[in-house]
Amino acid sequence: MTVRIITDSTAYIDEPTLQRLGITVVPLSVSFPDESFKENCISNEQFYLKMDASPTIPTSSQPAQGELYAAFAEAVSQGCEVLAVFISSKLSGTYTTALSAKKMVLQKYPQARIEIIDSLITTMSMGVPVIETARRAAEGRPLDELVDFASTMLKNSNIYFMPRTLEYLRKGGRIGRAAAFVGSLLNMRPILYFEEGWITLFEKVRGNRASIERLLGLVDKAAKERGLRHVVVHHVSAEKSGQELAQQIKEKHGIEAPVLSIGPVIGLHVGPGTIGIVIITKE
Image (cartoon, rainbow, N blue to C red; front, side, top):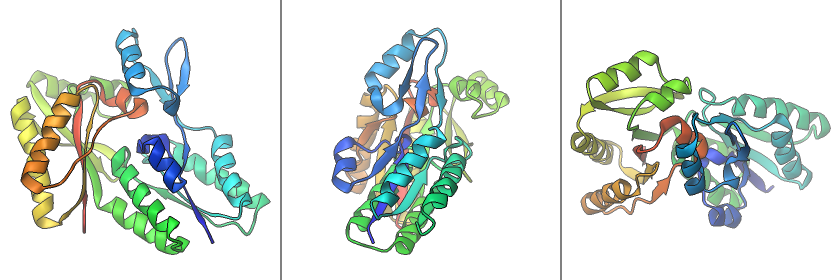
């Protein structure tokens, strides 16, 4: 039976890939005082220009239960099984709401098979596993095998990122107030990562050059200890820095690391100037 892959907009998968692999995206939303947008209905460039001009930091919100229900029901009504992978439940209520939507779909289609994975992560550290899983789904692999594959790849995936300031994370409630204060006081750049679904301080590094070297060191360490499967460079309004980082990765490891802007929902929490590296290992 065909397996439909469903994810949310914070996977930041480009439209051609979505179309080619038949991946369904349920978008999160962003809201300014005067208007709101589905995340995938405003370009990153437009969003960050608007955020720069806004007197307040915009907010984000999860998909409505009805939107998740509609995505599941459409796939099931077409005779598909469903594998859905969503943003970390520690950052968003999307996963929990999806579980409720699943129950509603099963009331109407009791024979349906819907598997939902809490990725415990986001951005392309979720997006790449979704893409790789969708490729295997297109080959006709069974649902149970796809669940195992996606779960394993997600466990081997993380993103290490450096906001210019922790103020956006603090205001969004994603990191403690004390961490924001200490980081700014010591003029150090924090390197953050995901631990059990939470955004957590990995370490603090003094100076921008040293912090970039530390990110590169994490790639080196992963390559030596676990083998590199994928590397992606993410940024928020820092494309030049992202390109320079990707070039250094290519020169040292021979890996083409795509350089991708982080979209509105995650970008509004980490803020402009953020740079990061998605590292997905072979084991």
